[in-house]
Image: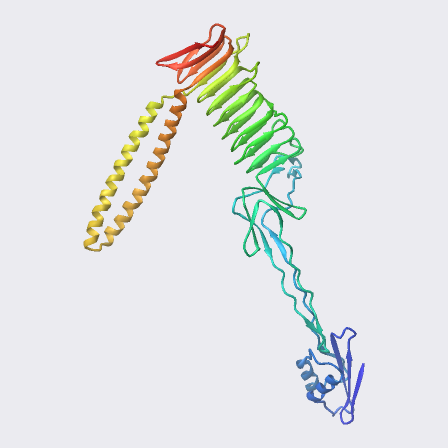
Length: 465
């Protein structure tokens, strides 16, 4: 407390807080008629060491309203503002809740546990916000109070991403799974599951890239890879596997009449039993029993005891195995090539192409005539007509491209089907039905080593030594 006395006016009591951030004042006149002047009080404040944060409005009001014998805050310092540390904004889920969901009825939904968030190539995944500057403060004595500076963070470590030139934006280099663990950012195109795929552990699994399952896939589960392949180290029960590329089962699959495999690539495994398989590539196994299989390429059963027993096997190009059927003469259908007449389909595509091409040429002729008239004189109606004709041409061009694509697909199918064959190296049992490019033959007697091909209007067989 500092006490300043003015002989002709009265006392001005000034107090400065211990932290020097506020100053207080009390005016005590000698007589009620006496008054103080603002300038004089400022001089007294300065003499007391108060040089910053003086509240002019409060001081003016205290003098004008003669607020005597009352303590009030006459000055306030300015607190320093700490700078904000740099921080990362993650644009993908960092903490994934893999716990089963409790439904409204009290039951538990396990199926969504294995949903893995993915990022696309070129997608922004992390934004860095740089540290913000600090702001210094002052106490009422005018001393500088330094603000704590914001701290910038080091760049993220990891792989599978690109960093912008200004070091602020992280972008996915590949399409895949994004994770941030232990201060490391990784983008991986493979999802690895170290356990079984089951309702209680993972739930159904859905991922954009490759999926590697080190355990088993239990009954009722679904595993989907939108753009990658699926590898299963263990066995597969009556589950559903869908892949954008290959499906590789290091053991086999007992589908129990409900298991399904669909792949844009090939499918392979030690054995397949009571399983539905549909793929664009090959199917390879050591044994196939009572399965429904459709292959866009070849079906090959290998090994000394490789056999196809029961079910229906269809391959666009060829089927090759050691044994077909068994002594019980279980029905086994083998089909190579296709059933429909591709020549008729090819002619249909060509007729459609010619028709659309003629329509395009008519439109081009009409546009040419309109352009000739527009060269002579501008006509808004003709301009609109030209726009309409141009749109029609674009539509016809699109249709023409679709027809040409389908025609080429048909040609490719014909190329595969023309060389269709079924080869059984050791034994074919009765009950086997052979079909190649729409022609059929039934095996009535046991046959050793034979190859079937379509020739002319029927199927011929060749003995194998």
